[in-house]
Structures are given as structure tokens and as C-alpha cells.
Length: 423
Image (cartoon, rainbow, N blue to C red; front, side):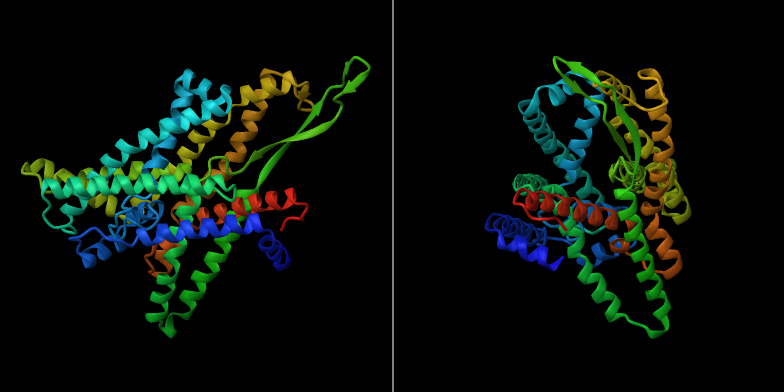
């Protein structure tokens, strides 16, 4: 492995790409630590330590939310816009046609619409977040000019990070947005380690050992599920064209265990965030009935058991939903039939689609349960160790491991192009 790393740095073009990406990530981390003025840092720290959901939001902002920096929302609005556009392709046939049938020009047009949609989403999310933080006395009184300035700066920060992400993606060494989120998660690890060291208690040795073992097992599980797939055998009929014979070969159709990635966690997080935010807004309402209902809802969502159970169920449900969106057995069956392919023992056409649908449902069940457990891992760890930190959460591990695997594969592709073996 070390020999392969040396080979990477011996190739000038590849070395320059890696250094360029590192410089962009350093710029991002510097910008993420420039705070907005007027923030009560102690109140902010207590707020994030006592709220798992906003800890998750902080992950997707790249760490900018926990310090209320000029990169307040990070790439969160861009991710939201991308998800909305992907879902619209399943609803609006014209969008699907542009994205899938018009080639590179269609994808560029689709990406441009995603960028435009990011701007209003970033403005609305910034305003909502600032209003929520003001209600928690984290931010002081703001004039309309101050509020407008923060919204404009935050939107500009999101657009800047979106641009950095696209520059990184162009180098074909990992996905830019994923690497930005990855950098935000990894940057928080030293502070967690230093906090554990500064509060070290020898009587808690077995607690820390349990935490370490749980982390190792979670990483191994993420790797296995991320790389796991069910291979469906596919055979191709022999065809004669002119004097040549084509086909007659056997292959396989891979069905991934985790077809949806981290998207179900993002969907579930958005749903779980909404009632709590509304309750926080209405808790101080002048109407006694409204205020009491809001406080009741807020107390329910502060209950760890209810919150964890609801979060788990939503993640499992959204895993099935998003898998159904991205995996269309009818189209796959139709494509196989056109190419002369068939699943041995299964009739082409409708029977093949039903077979693929049944197999995908079974495979998705294990992936959905895994994602649900990963999502509630912070609550499980807290129950056993009393450590309340999103940095040891499963969502962060899932993102970090997935990004590392994807980046290594792309580097391997670059090495293969230059006649080197991969890792």
C-alpha cells in the first residue's frame, strides 16, 4: 500500500491534483471558522451538545453551523436542491428526458437549474435558522440590516462552497461536495479526542474501550454494507449478424445492499427537524393554548426514546421510498430484453421485472435496518457511555467511509490509466 502511495506522488499530474484539492479544503476550513458577530459562544456550545438533530445538521454544513460562521449552512442547501431536482425527474417527464436523453448538454442544463434553486433555498434556510437561534438567546437583537447582511453572507458562502465542490469534482478524485462534508467531519475529530483526554477518568476505562470497539465494529459494518451487493445472473442469447455470431455470454446484474446511500437519513432528518422548529417558534406565543401545545410537542421530541424510535422508522421508510425512486425494475427488464439478455429460469418482460422487484425488496430490508441503526447509533452509545457527541455518530462514520471508498476507487482509476495497479 505504501508503495502505491509513493507511485501516486511520483506522477506529477496526479500529485498536483491532490495538492490542489488539499488547498481548496484548507480554504474551506479557514472560512468555516470566521464567526458571525454577536454570537454567545457558551450558549451555542450548550445548544449543540443538547440537540442531536442540530448536530446532524452541523455535519452536513461542514462544521460551519456550530460556530455560526459565514459558512453557516455549508453545502446543505445545494444538497437539498439536488434531492428536489432528482425527485422532480420522477414526476415531470420533461425533466427526466432532459437529464437522461439529451446527453452532456442536458446534464449541464439540469445542474444549472440545481444551482439556481440553491439560492432561494439557502436564503430561506438561513432566515429560519437565525430566527431559531435568536429564540434560544444564542444571538442578540438584530436589526433588519443585520439580518439581511447575515442572509446575504450565508448565501454567498454556500455558493462559494458549491463552486469549490465543482472545482474538486473536475479533478476526478472524489466528489467535491462529499469531500467538503468529509473535511468538516474529520476536522471535528481532534477536538473530540482532546476533550476525552482532558476529562480522562481511569475508572471509565472500560467505557472508553467499549466506545472504541463500537467504532471499529461500526466502520467494518459500514464498509461491508457499502460494498455489499446481490449479483443476479444474466445470460445473453446468441445472435448472428452477417457472418459473425454475437452474444452467448453470461454476466450478472449487481443489486447494491445500500442503494440509497445517506439520502434516507437526510430525508428523515428534515422531517424530524420540522415539528421541533415549529414548536420552538410557537412556545412563546401569546395564545396560551398554542403555547401549551407547542411546549408539549417540544417535550415529546426531547424524549430520547420517542425521538430515536421515530427517527429509525422514518429512515427505514425513506430507504424503501428512495430505492423505489432510483431503481426501476420495469426499465431494467426492458433494457435486458432489448439486448437479448434474460435471467436464467425467469421469462423476459413482466416476470423478470417482478423477480427483480422481489429480490430488491429483500436486499433493501437489510440495508434499511442497517441505515436505521446507523442513524440512532449516537443514542445507543449515549445510553451505554453517557457520551453525547454527534462526532461518534454512525451518520458521520457512514459519510467518512463512503467518501474514502469512492475517492480510493477514483484514484485507482487514475493509476490504471497510467498502467499502475490499484490499492
